Length: 192
Image (cartoon, rainbow, N blue to C red; front, side, top):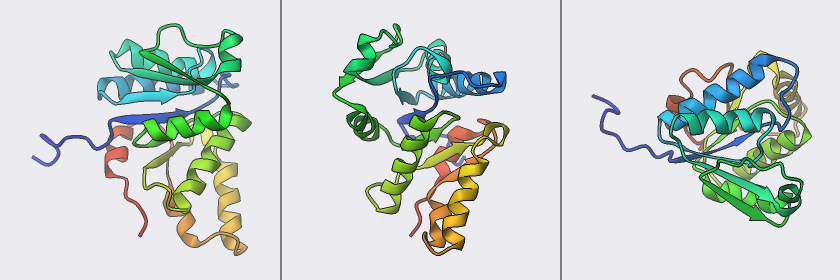
């Protein structure tokens, strides 16, 4: 009976990912599947608000599953007409830092998909905030096609060389697919 009548503590999740599609169709499929899983689980998707690349795919997946999707976008990107036209809600902010802050405020957890330097920035900042105990929210890195392996290796290198505590690896979890990701969010624990 465990979990059958349990109310989810994760009601919304920020997904950090690329506005490009990447070099493998697996990236887009994974993003769309993640959106479908979140929508089906009635977990609100909070993301960067874009209509292209992995951003568009995760939003489309959530929307087609009846999910709520909140986009958070700086004004200057809205003026370039890159926002998704079918969102539940679009929140405009002043700049990229305000975007990260608003996404943090609206989310009970974070999922990282492949992306470029913007996604890398978001990922490292949210891990740093957790390390500094600004939050205890779950962080899940979806390591599709071993995309994030170099980052994971770099974090391990900072530990091996004494620049990060060994507990740093406990700040986030890594999975190779979206299978079981909703359960992973629910079961994620905060380091002591």
